[in-house]
Amino acid sequence: MRICYVVAMVAEAQPFIERYGIKQVEGFFAPLPCMLYEGEVNGHTLDVVLNGQQQGSDLIGCEAATMATLSAIQRLHPDIVVNSGTCGGFKE
Image 1 (cartoon, helix red, strand yellow):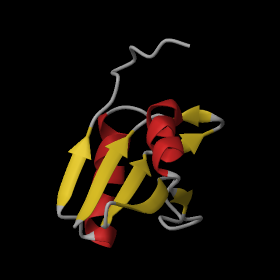
Image 2 (spheres, one colour; image 1 turned 90 degrees about the horizontal axis):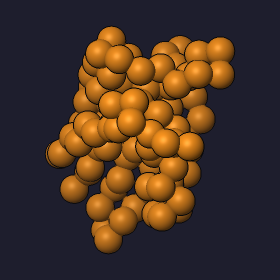
Image 3 (tube, one colour; image 1 turned 90 degrees about the vertical axis):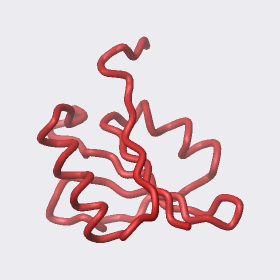
Image 4 (spheres, one colour; image 1 turned 30 degrees about the horizontal axis):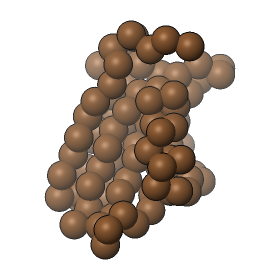
């Protein structure tokens, strides 16, 4: 099974990246700014897709999320897509 977890901010994805030891796939979505981290968890492929960054800031909002999610579905063909986030409620 292929699970695609889509998030806007690097800080939201970081716990998954660290917990499961998944690695970034450089340039997978080029020329789009979206980023892909991929690994295997309990025999399933886990893809963590981020909207990307521009000028050092995370891309947030409906447009960035739509682009990242559509690109992930078209390129990865996941069985499950989970889109979650903190809606700006992330505390440093």
